[in-house]
Image 1 (spheres, rainbow, N blue to C red):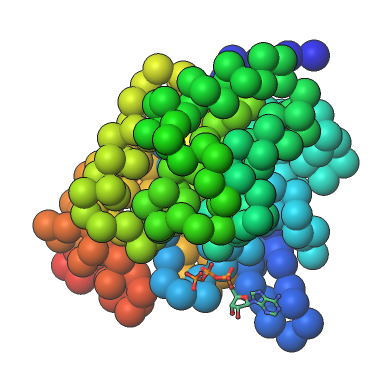
Image 2: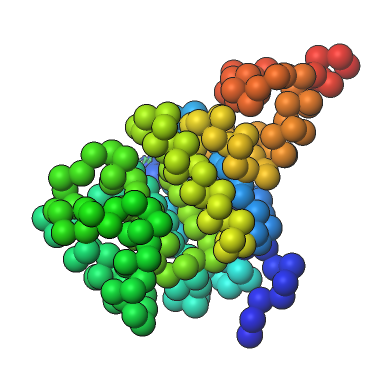
Length: 254
Ligand SMILES: Nc1ncnc2c1ncn2[C@@H]1O[C@H](COP(=O)(O)OP(=O)(O)OP(=O)(O)O)[C@@H](O)[C@H]1O
C-alpha cells in the first residue's frame, strides 16, 4: 500500500545503540517530513554516523524503531531500500574499477532500465563525463564527491542520506555541490537527511536542524528558531552553546 501523503520520510522512536559499555545513541526520537532537508549536527563522537548507519539498515539498533515512508526498517527494509540511497566521503567505491564500471554495477543492483542513458545523464549533470573511464581510486576529493553523488542518485531516491556532503572540499567545489543539492531537491521533491559539521551549509540547505550531543538530541528547530532561542547571530555559536552545555537566552533571563 502506498504511504499516505503526510507520512514522514523518517520516523525514529526510542532508538538506542550500544557498543558494549559505550552508548553511542540513547533514546533518539525524531521525525523528518517528506520533501524536507534536515541536518543532524553534533561534535565528534556525538552519534551521527551511528544514527545514519541504523537508518540505512547497515547497523542493528539495540532498541527502538525506525520507519521510512511508513515502513518498518527493521522488519521490512527491502520494501524501502529501493527508495533510498546515500553518499559518504568515508565509504569508497572499489578503486580499481572505472567510474563507469562502478556506476553500472550499482545501476544493476537497483535493476534500472537504460543503464547507459542514466549514467550518461548523471555524468553530464555532475561534470564527470570525461572521467568515466578512469579508475575510481585515482580521483581528487572533489571528483570523488561528484562520483559518490552520481552513485547515490542512480535510483532517483525519494530519501537521500548524506554524511558530510562537502567534507574536505575547497570553497568553490563545496558551493558547487550545495547548489547542485538545492536544485536537485527543488526539482525532485526528495527528502534529504544529512550529517554535517559545516554550519553555513546547514543554514543554507536545511529546513530543520537536530542538534546532537553524547548520543542524545539536545535541541532542534529551524535555523532561525535556534538563532533566536539562543540569542545568537550564527548557527556556529548555537552549536558551541549546545556542545558546551550553555543555556538558551530564555533560560539565562529566567
Ligand atoms: N564500532 C564501534 N565500536 C565501539 N564504539 C563505537 C563504534 N563506532 C562508534 N563508536 C562510539 O560511538 C560514539 C558515537 O560515534 P559516531 O561515529 O556515531 O559519532 P559521530 O557523531 O559520527 O562522530 P564524527 O563527527 O567524529 O564522525 C563514539 O563514542 C564512538 O567512539
